Length: 350
Image (cartoon, rainbow, N blue to C red; front, side):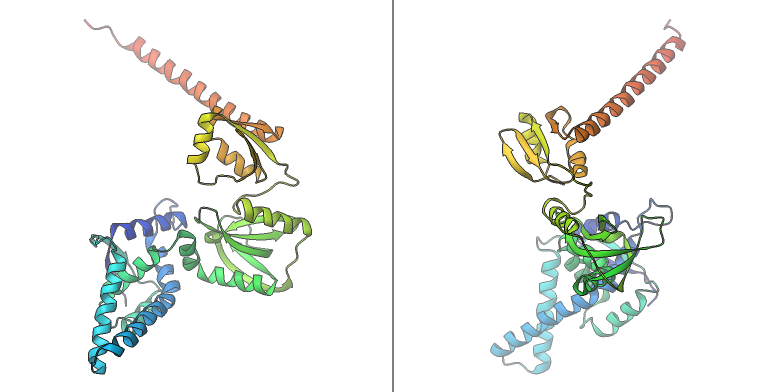
């Protein structure tokens, strides 16, 4: 198959596919334009077997259930089951009876063409290619984002899971590194608290590092056994408890933060990357999470959150605001000068 396919889906499914292309960083060579076909290619190649199994389970269930109560010939029974299964999938694709008003284009590539040929030859069950991929994309879009990430990057995920189960080191290459690759001792793959992304927690030398699954290009298990120190194992447990996507510095102490009344409201409302306190006393919270996480979370609060300790984190946040304030002060002076200059050059009205 070499022709581009056009698949009609709901607006929700179309938005999720586009969002995943951005979140999983599928870009063209210019680094700005989304490469949605690259996402769809990996989605189809890595998901069609699982989707085929789901379709098979539904069809087998219908054959058994309807066959017990309906005295039909085999051919009639199979046709009825296909009709019911098609209706079920269509309802799943549009549970609120949405229209299939958005078009998604799938262009065959060297990686996907054999799979597309196989699907067309064996898996349509009397339906069309467009219907099949509408159902496949809708099934994918119904999953949480971290589960979708495991599908799109299934080869890397499965290779890492095998290495973790065998307690072996891996050789990984990633997108965002100048290195060609490096060895790691993989500990666990886990999702962020918000179920947005999957992260590999691994030991690299004496350091504990989180790596987003979607940024791992390849993972090759090695013969050497993985090794972790007691300190690293304890740190991994903290990362699992408070946020796997954040790095921890050596011997990071607990942080104490005081919130204003408005800050307390903001803390309840801003749930993305929200740190979990280990102790709360009125408006004073104690956190044992990464200082990097606290920094990224608290800079949105302005004067409604104050870091009591540690002093180093308080200074980082103070410096952040000071630099921002200096930038805005400089910009105001610049634009004020330009405005005054323009007014001075403008002749008075007659």
